[in-house]
Length: 93
Image (tube, rainbow, N blue to C red; front, top):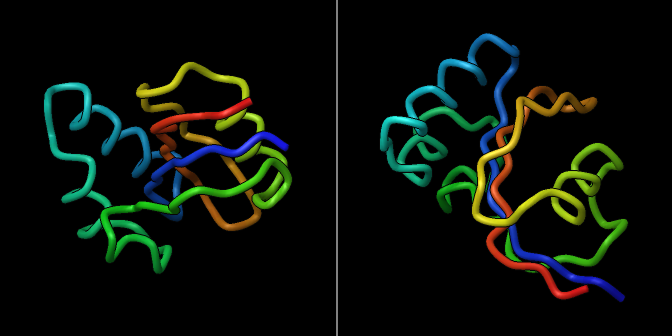
């Protein structure tokens, strides 16, 4: 079964996610922004979710992690939890 390692930043609004994505585009540190802004408990670890299997996350999240290019920040991605900026670190298909 496919596995991947990803990190994310979870916020309440699309606008906040877009604002953070712009900061990342000009060189802001993903981990620091996650610690400062993420609503997910993983924020304390810089947004690191560790390794997980396909199907362990909600569908919208899985679609990004297992189908989009790695080492690129994707989003905002809307889920029932809020808006995510997602970066897949590696993937084993």
